[in-house]
Image 1: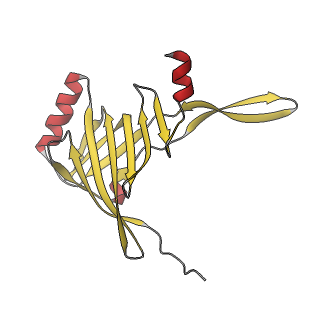
Image 2: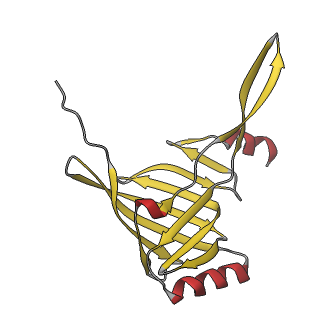
Length: 165
């Protein structure tokens, strides 16, 4: 009989901005990665109301609270907004479950707002690129400019791309 596993939890996270090096640390409460959710349409047909997926994903909103003040964060956000290219965030972290630690890496490109509350710097926005890797395995990759919507190795936008590009 298998024993009960303890819940997996995030134990440490480091945030890097635009490849300039470490911008600071965050924790599980300061990290909100984009939700992956398809927009559904509801129709009435055949005496029933039915919902179906449209093949369109909702906005990839994120929020990262960096637990320190760093001038390089402001410089990077300012330069990214001025150039129109946005900011590249890389979040490297570790989870633990039953004493076993596993790494994860989240990559986000977007044009975030920046706010300061005490010694916490918050970057909040909508990602144009979002990728997530867990224990060395890519789980998802979204690229809104190139119409890529990869989840578990399946590109859900490949057919749409082939129809319109």
